[in-house]
Length: 234
Image (spheres, rainbow, N blue to C red):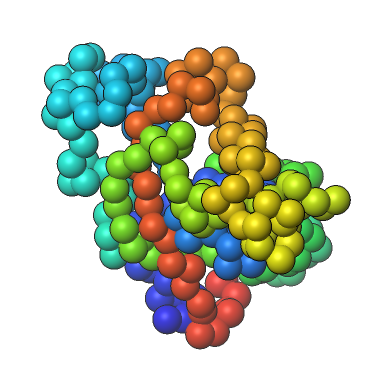
């Protein structure tokens, strides 16, 4: 699909941290977990404290999760929100333009605005402020299921984009790069997964959504889509 076709096909978005964007681009990540939130209390998770075969949420009464209530569904095309800024501003014939730059310092699409539009400010911008037209990563949802972060297999932890920290530097976990002869025996991999999980959550929410809280989550399988042509949207 072309860039325009992908943009038109998008039905949603996901926010990713800088390390997870890197994992997506390096094809080390093909799934992501998002904690379920109770529709009756957005500050609390559904099925929060019962292990692990709850039948209904004690707050809203919703039955044990069916994929029909997940935010994304198999086949959905979504785009990635990530940290970014705009550079190389230009103004010609009443029209502003600028290139989007990402945290890894690569540049993407060039966007255009009229004098009547709100021009984005200089400096790094939070991921949630990234315009859809600026995205560089498109994904198709390939699977939807429920799972808790403490119940992942080593293979699933690796598929989340987690790197092993047993060596001098972080690297993919494999028997030839780790003294533990693979992920099944590597405690460093599990420790890094727990650290990554907590690192992207506000400290005030760790009691509900942190690794130790082990919240029930939606698991989305991801397939990164390639553009046939990288065009500039005007």
